Image (cartoon, rainbow, N blue to C red; front, side, top):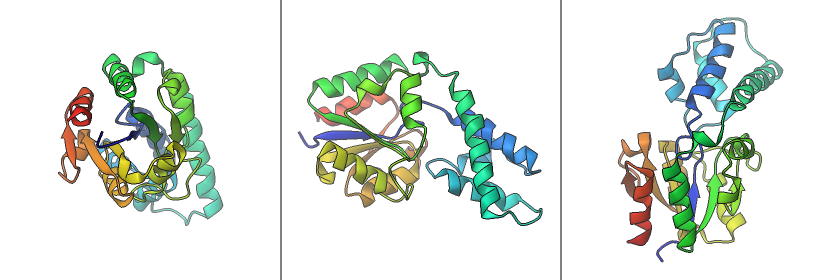
Length: 214
């Protein structure tokens, strides 16, 4: 096999929590008198919570905000977001995704999550997908978010695999950059296909099987 392991981003690849992130950030932005649209939300894909707040504050025109206050805002946003995640169920992951993950594992590949989200474990539990992965590397284990390769290198370390033997599946261009910086090939799905920078592009999750079986 060309690869020994597959590392998946979570949001936008396996589950879709964009709407929950958007509504949580918008609630905070509205309270601060900041215009925040779905187009603005697109800029937050694949970046850390802290970086996301700085992007939102680009439109802020009030009194200077202290670092301590920013930390309070981050906690506030995350509480709103986590409350909404409580509505997620097994149905938030398609059968196509579940069956494809199962077939990849049956073919002998090891599977891991490589996500900057600090809510990764909670989301996996809500959608009943925890047992699908051998390892989980997430935002609680890293200090630098994508496009830094840290989370993917952490996933490879947990899997005990060489980075060059790992294939990354991503929906964000920052994730493609991170994968390549880690020395890994990358599969783009969704928005990440636009740049053409990935090693492979797929339009449907199960097309991943064709790449791995080639």
